[in-house]
Every structure is written in C-alpha cells, then in structure tokens.
Length: 260
Image (cartoon, rainbow, N blue to C red; front, side, top):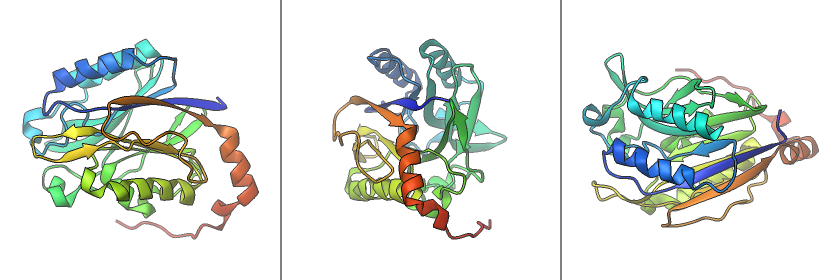
C-alpha cells in the first residue's frame, strides 16, 4: 500500500470524431509529464469529443484505443483512465476504462446518460458502480453527468478517491465547481474532476476548470480555465485518515438501498 498517490490530470482540447489524432495528441501530452506518476487521467470520450454518432466512432474492447491505453500504461508504469465509445452486444456505451500497467482492464459504463443531449437515446446506461483497488487506494471513477446525482456516488465502502471525467459545458460550469467540492465534503474523500476545453462541432464550449479537492473541500490544484494543462496532484492517505478519525462524519451515514 502506498501512502501517496500521484495523479496527472490532462486537461485538453479534443479533435472532433478523430480517434487517431486524439491518440497522437495524448501520446505527446503523456510523454511531457515531468515526473513518474501512479495514475494518468484523460477526459470523457477523449478520442472523439461528446458525440452522438456512435455508429461512426465506436470501437470494441479489442480496438486500437484500448490497445493504445495498454501500451501507454505499460510504458509509463501508470494506470490510464478515460472514457471512449464502445460497441458491445449490439449496444453502445460511454465506457470509462481503468487500464493498469499490467494490461488488466476494469471498466465502468456511464450510469446517468445526459438526456438534455439525448445521450440516453444512443447509449445504454450502466448498472454497476466500479470501485478500483489500486496500490492500496480505493478509487471510484464516474463520468460527467453522474456528478449531479449524489446517491450514486455515496461513499458506503470507504473509498479514498472519487474521480469524474467530463465534457462539462461552460454555461453550467458553476455547477461543476460547486458539486465537485460538495462530493468531496460529503464523502470525506479526495474528489478529482477532469474536464476538457475548446469547442466541439455542435458549438458547445468547454472551459476546463479541472480540479482536485481534499476531504474538507479545499482545492489542492488551481482551476485552470481555457488552457491545455497537465496538473499533478499528490494525494495523501494520512490526510484522509486524520480527518475521518477526528470528525467521524461517515459514521453517521443514513442507511438505505438503491432500487432499480
């Protein structure tokens, strides 16, 4: 078990519906990371942007992007996280992949598909939450719109890190900032939000504001608007244990079950 977890968050623009160019771009960004890290985080749909043309861009779990992620994880010695469009059993998924240096792959399918953009009409909704045990850290990775639903992210297993990858648009960026901080405070965990920048072909504008919050809701990385930027956050186990033992807020959780 590691007392520290070093996480590199790559906030970037995306090339619309062009997996090859996006893989090339992120290869360069990963190469430029100035130190060894444990985890590298890429945005939601990092090979395509937030597209509803799943037929055009979908890959399989044996496709080029999955192989690329495995190669990058092995080469860097860091787990690679990001979501891509996956076709499986005649359905499409907005699927987050957690690819370990060993080549092992864990995945999470976005639970809350974004009805405002009719994502629910294209992509099947996931049903299972993923808790990754990596280097002694419990990580709960989620995707974008999931951020608005606190019951789904509720910390009932004492995870250490809640992580969101996103294409969160500029007009609602205040909600992004506010809810990331709230999720950290209510779950007494580190909360990481990695958002893209730029404008897509649907004229949606994205301004970043990627950030990492500690157990108390303090931002430990700066909010970087409208700028390609790689931020490295060093997470500390002792920070989590100190405040959980001192404040004991999680001991007072209500007990209930999700149905459906």
